[in-house]
Each structure stands twice: as structure tokens, then as C-alpha cells.
Length: 602
Image (cartoon, rainbow, N blue to C red; front, side, top):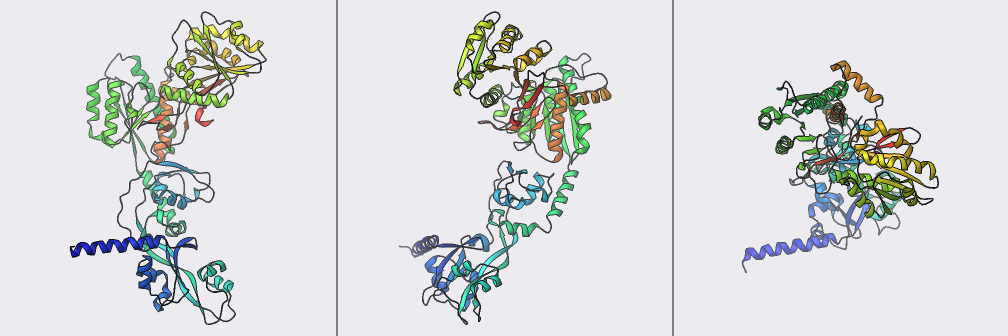
């Protein structure tokens, strides 16, 4: 056999045996750290123990300082289980930071324990949560963290090592333990062969020393992290705050305002109203943001060639966020640009675009119908647990997609369902025969058609008044918001819950925006559904409160409850982009109150 090959095989064999011996050594915990330990026999040496256990001789000598004077029978040799990471500079590693996540601090947590838990740098956590000072990391606080984002660095580690102590007259385990800042049980654990202390004899004692080493946050103790940062963490934070204040955020609004046309279509004016609402938000909140928000507005003129020309401008690559038009081809172009340049693109105006499924930089405001209904039915089966469902199927008009999904989801959830065919006006007698005493129901029409609503309202009102032996609630569709002028009081009598992507309760917040709009622009906002001026205002507030305070918009961004629109983005199964999960429910109650709330917030 080739001598070099034989030598290599022998090296591999020795390494294999050493590793196996090492992993089979018993372990004890000293000062909160785990140590391999080996009980010495007669006439052993550090070199011999190294060969027998697989522990490096230099590491044995480093942690057992007394060993340089010779080994004594029955004494223990101890080496940290993670001695490699504690004593030797780590080799360069490839780090792959994960998606930012949210973490709520538990009892005993602080910024250092969070950093260690996620192997994230303290600086990175401070930067991602710029509104929180180091002292604000308390139980119950939710912070944004990017796991596996810390790089190795040099720090001073508190390392436990072992030496001998010469026993003096009248000394006890208790007095020696106090001298070395340990416990009597630890001393007895380190000296299992010593039953009684005798003057002139030696015992093994632990002591702490500070050693300059290199490692990751994940390998450091929380105490070492705190020791490393405590004296200057406030300075780091103040520097980051100043950097964030000086860093500007560029938002591009790329919409077809069609300013080149003297007689532009209504859609162009609605986009203009959206921009006006956005600028009102900037005026209201811009000064409160920790960094300057630059809004750059571009008119695509509803022309794909113009859109391509705008996207070719060098300044476009400096944008941090883009609000895109709803027109299919223009939206596709802007989404592709955002993906190529790592810029998030907000789609506020259409559900008829699937780019969010494959584009991680696409943000969809209008929740897709299947997800909208899934969130609705999950809420229904919780809020109306043990209720039966009655479907009112309109014979004259086709059932909506939403109705089909609601029906499917409730059946899958095991809800007892029955159906009434509605041909002409719904009969109170037909409805009453479906209502059993001491039973609660949810009643769901098959579409949001105004004619169907007109057909079923009288019978539902009569049942509310006469069938006091049971109870029911009506589920209304987003389209029903258009008919509130005629049917709002009826919906209150029936006790109705309407689900929607958008709803404006027209309270004081709305009046404040309307007053600001009149002051700035004169006149009133254009009527539309959704209200484009309010959509622009809500979007502006959301962007300013998040990106204006140095937070990227992602899954960890807090729920924002706007005047008309809520925002809470997350990734759904099989999709790369972000989808808005903030579904609004509006309760028209019999006590003449209208309460709107976000499903996620209940």
C-alpha cells in the first residue's frame, strides 16, 4: 500500500476514534455551562488523556490551569462542550439571512436575549425597530428581527476555568465557595473523591476569566452580549436614529392622470383624487416621520409606450416604493420593473392580476375573493358557533362566486345547511318553516343583487318580529354598501353583518379629511366605490407610518386601520408576493348602531 495513503487512513482512524471518545464523555453543568469531564487515574499525562478522549491537549491545559504542575489521581479534567467556538476564532461562514419575522418579548427577555435567540445582530434589531430605545425591549413588546443575520466578531467572553486551591485550617466547602463565587454543591461536584477537607490538601475550584475571542451572537451568552454592548448601546442607537433621519424615502406614484387630454375620462379624475388624498396624508403625517418622504408623481397617460419610457428613467431605480396603475399591461410592466430592481410595488386598484403569486415584490391591496371568503367563513364559524346556515338562492339571477365559496367552506366546516329557492318575493311562511325553535341561524343570499335584497327584506323583518323563539343574522355582500340609502334601517332591524374590502363609516375622521380636502383643493371629493380620495389618504398614512419610520412594508408591519381601508400584508400558501388580509366587517345592529372592525383585530 502507498505509504502516504496509509498515513492518511491512520489519521482518519485516529480522528474518528477521538471524536467518538469525546462524545461519549459524561457532561456536568458548571456556572450555567456544560463541560465534558474526565476522572484521572494513576500516572496519567495531559498528552495521554488527549489521545484517550480526543480532547485537544492545548485545550485541556488551557481550561485546567493546575495541570501544568502535573496531574493528580482522582482529580477531574474539564473542557467546555463547545470549546471550539469559545476558544478559537471561527472560520468564515456563509450566512443566509431569513425573512424578517415578528417576535413578542416574553418574561425575562431583552434585546440581548432576542439577538441570541435569532442569531441576529444587536445593531440590526435596533435599526429594524428604530422607534424603540434599548430600554424599551420589555415583555409584551413586538419587535422585527431578521434571523441568521449576525456576522462573527471579536468580543470579551467570560470563561470558566479550573485551578487548585490549597486548603487552610478551618476552611469549609461553604467558605471556599463564597471565596470563589460558586456553590458548595459545585465544589463537591468537582471533587467527588473528597469527603472531608484537610489542611494542606488541594481541591479543584472554578474561576471566571475574561478572554478575547471570536464568535457569533448565537454562540455567546446573553451576559457576554450585554457586557460587550452595555457601555455603548445608547450611542449606537442614537447614531442609527440620526442615520434614519438623514435617509430619505422615495415613493413613486405612477398613474394615468392623462393630463395631456383636455377632456380626460372619469377614471383619470379618480386617479387624481387618489393623489390628492395621498398628499393630504403627507401633509398630516409627514412631519411626524423619522425620515423625509419624497413623493415623485408620473403620468403614464394611459399609454404603454409612455409607461416604458418612464420606467427607463435612471431615477426610477432610486425609488423605495411604487404605487402602480390598475390597467393590466401597465401594471404588468411596473411589477416586472419592481421585481428586477428589488422595489415593492403596490397594486391598489384591481384584483385581476396574478403577479403576486410569483413576484415577491408585488403587494396586492384588494384581497383575492377566495381568501376574502376564507377569512369571512373562519370568522363566521367562530362568531356563530353552533349556528345553522340558510342559503337564499335567487332563481332569477346566477349565484355569485363569493356565494359558491361561502357555501363550500361552510359545508366543509361541518355547518348544517339548508336552502330556500327565492322565485319572486320570499314568503314569510316558507322562511318560518325553516326556522326551528331554540336554534340560531346565519342567512346568506346567493348574490349581492339589489333586486334579491328587495325580495327577501320583508320576510326577514317579519321573522325578526314574530319568531322570537329563535334568532338569526343576515350576511350581506360588499355590493350592498351601494344600497344603504334605501336599506340601511332594514339591515339594522334584521341584525346584519356585511363584509367588504372597503368601508367608510363617515365618522369624525372622514369629516376631518373632507375639511382638509376642501381647504386645500376647494369642493368635495369625487363619489366612487371605493372612495378614491380616502383610499389615497389611507394608503399615504400607511406608507408614511411604516416606511417613514424606517420600516419596510412586509409581513411584520403592524395592522393599520384606515378610514376606509385596512392594511395587513402576509404571504399565502404558494405565493411569493404579499396579500392584504385586513377584511372589514360592518355590523348593522338593531340598536341603530353601525360598527366596523377588521377581522384580524377581533
